[in-house]
Amino acid sequence: MSHISRPEQTSDILDHLATFPRAVENVKPEELWRLLGEIHGQTLRLLVVHDIIVGRLYRDSRQRETRAASPPAERLLNARQAATVLGVALRWMRRHSPRLPFAKKLSYRSVRYSEVGIRKWLQTRRAS
Image 1 (spheres, rainbow, N blue to C red):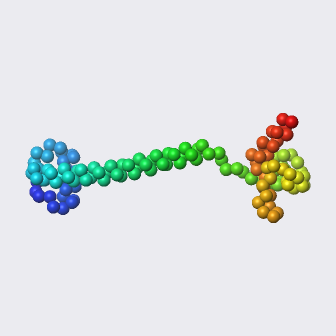
Image 2 (image 1 turned 120 degrees about the vertical axis):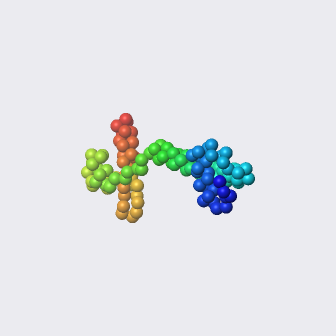
Image 3 (image 1 turned 90 degrees about the horizontal axis):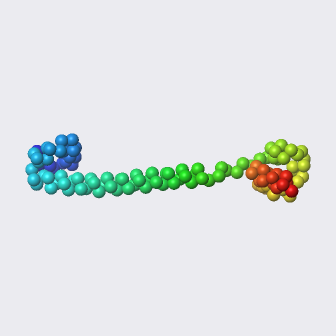
């Protein structure tokens, strides 16, 4: 094998040696040191890439676990939907909303009702 001067030649030679390891016997001793240095450099670069990939996979799996463990977003109902769940008139719903613990005032004239809050409130009302 001839003197190694270009990087693509080095990588071609290393690819060849990876495929045919016994071909190392045909490489000049001074080129073996150069190839060994290149292998070492590539190993270090690949270890960095390896660590980044492992970190990304770990982070992604942790995010999936966190998403799976977190409860679903709370659903807010409008007055008509909440009245249906409670089995009351829409007028009753609007009149009593300031005193209902599950009512969420969003703005001056906008109120929504927590579906989870309604269900909990109904359970406490049935229990008493």
